[in-house]
Each structure stands twice: as structure tokens, then as C-alpha cells.
Length: 367
Ligand SMILES: Nc1ncnc2c1ncn2[C@@H]1O[C@H](COP(=O)(O)OP(=O)(O)O)[C@@H](O)[C@H]1O
Ligand SMILES: [Mg+2]
Image 1 (cartoon, rainbow, N blue to C red):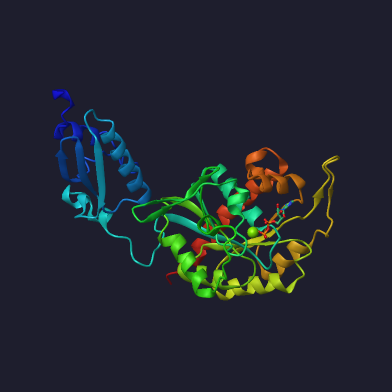
Image 2: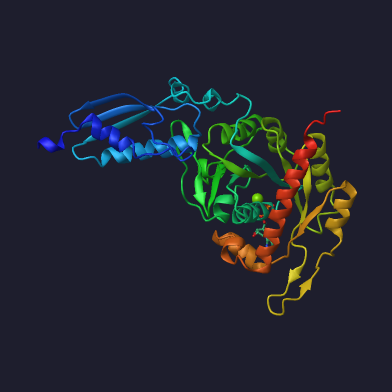
């Protein structure tokens, strides 16, 4: 049929309906469309991206493919991604927008990074990391979480995520869970695949999580760390300028050497210590709601005083918090108005202001 003939005008019309989520301008106006070829029902073209974020590239590429496939008469669509000369320059915009990100900054679109760490395992790092991430999101931020615990990657389970990360344009697309962007080593290796993690492998895993994942623009990127003072902590602090670390401990662990060792290590690595979270502080009776400090209640405060850092939160030992984690719906999502969730929201607020505080303090002063 004659009206099913695919014209350049129709193709450009379709591409003109696809917008850059960041600038709000369409692909044609931005001058991104190159090498357009129409052969019968086959349409191929290159999107000449330059300074756009990976997330925006992905959105525009899939938007363009979809819009073209919907055109009458189109049988095949091939949208390539190209670097090409910067379209921003071609259209007389500020050339800075097209400048490639400096090699060293692996995550230029991430405003704050923070690690959740501890002296040892089982103290609630992952529980804190996941609920803190959700609480930051609930406070209105765009949040990503990296499960860097190569020995026990629990974050996918705690976020109820069985999805697989996608690949696009040689970038890994993080999994979405409860509004967070998430990546975990647990998503990349099979659960029963035995891996002996050596230092260099951990280092390259962390690099890969930053360099090869399309995080897009984030306000906060939270790292759930393996326990202790091992390679992951050292690698992370070398790969990026880490915004700060939240140290999780339980009241009975406070006295242990592990926590002090871990705190001392971050100090030596010049990673700002945002403060201490005392987890499983008190047991709140599910029947009468009476809090009981099973392990005593002064530990976290004492430790914080000793290291001159704030006690960020005292989180109750709560059966529902554990169950929520096991079921993949964090307590902050499952019961957002509960006192337990409120404790995480308070923690999120303190962490946000601490990050701003230490970020400012870390700036060189001009004398
Ligand atoms: N405040 C809490 N109340 C009850 N259970 C908790 C709490 N924090 C953590 N847990 C549970 O304790 C176990 C260990 O916590 P997890 O976050 O996996 O620790 P880590 O990451 O330090 O190994 C998990 O079963 C978790 O659900
Ligand atoms: Mg864990």
C-alpha cells in the first residue's frame, strides 16, 4: 500500500517525539540523529550521544526504537549508539556539556557516597544499609545501593529482588527494587558458584560496579560492605573519594577489638566516620511495647565518645525487622509509620546532614 511507505519525514516526526529526560529537548532538535537510512520498511540510524548520562542515553535509545517500531510500514529498526562530534557544540551550546567525564571520576553523577560497615558479620549491616537507603529515598532522594559483601551478598534477598541486571551499550543497568537502583555480586554469580575472593578480584569488582554500571544521577550511593577491615574497605576508599562511613555495632560488640580496629582503619584511610549505629539496642516487647536493654544501653554512646564521632541511632531489636528483611520487604516499606521505620528515617536525616558537614569540612581551606 502506498501510504505504508516509510518517509524520512515520518521518521523524523517520530524521533521528534522522543525527548532527552534531562534537557527536555527532542532528539531531532538536539541534533542527535545521524546516518539515517530507510530501505523499504527498514530504518537505521545512529544517535550521536556525547555528554548525556548513561541513564538518559538508555531512555532515548529505547524511546527512539519504540517510536520507530510504531510507525506504519516499519518492519525493522536498528538504532545504533555513537559518540560522534558533540551535538551540543554543533548547535552552539556550551561545549562544557559535551566534555567527557574525567577518567578518575567513575561516578560523576553521584552526589554522595557512603559505606555501611562493621567490625564483624551478623550485626545488622545489610539491614541498616537497606533500610537507610529506603529511608533516604522516602526523604525525597534518588538512591542507589551496592551490595559489596562478596562473602554474603544479602541485599537482593532483603529487597525481594529476583531480577537480573540488564546490559545496554556495554553498561550494566542496575536492578530496580522498592524505588532503589541496586547492584549486587549476588546478581552476577550463581548462588552455588564457589568463589574464593582474593584482593585483586574484590578491587576489580568494586571498580566494575562503579565504572560499568549505568547508575545515572543519584543523590546517594550506599555500599553494604563485607565485615571487618579487609580488601573491600581499602579498595573502595582508593577507587572513589568515599563520602563517609556508618559503623554498625551491637551493644555487646561495642567492647570488642573488631569495632575499634575497623574504626581505626577508616581513620587511617582518611574516610570520614559519619558516626555509629547501635543496632539491636533494646528489645521492644511485641505484647506490651516495653523496651528492655538486654545488652545494656551505654555501649554505643561510650564508643562514639571514645572516637569523637556522633551516635547516629539506637535501633531496637525487633522481630518484625528481621522478618521483613527475610521476606524482601524492608520494615521501612512494610510498615513505614512504625516506630522502627521512624528510627531509620531519623537515621537518614542525620546521615544527610553529617555528609554535608564532613563534605564541607573536607574542603581545603584558603588561608
Ligand atoms: N534491629 C534488628 N532487629 C531484629 N533483627 C535484626 C535487626 N537487625 C538485623 N537483624 C537480623 O539479624 C540478622 C543479621 O543481620 P544482617 O543485616 O544480615 O547483618 P550483617 O549484614 O551485618 O551480617 C538478619 O537475620 C537480620 O534480619
Ligand atoms: Mg550483610
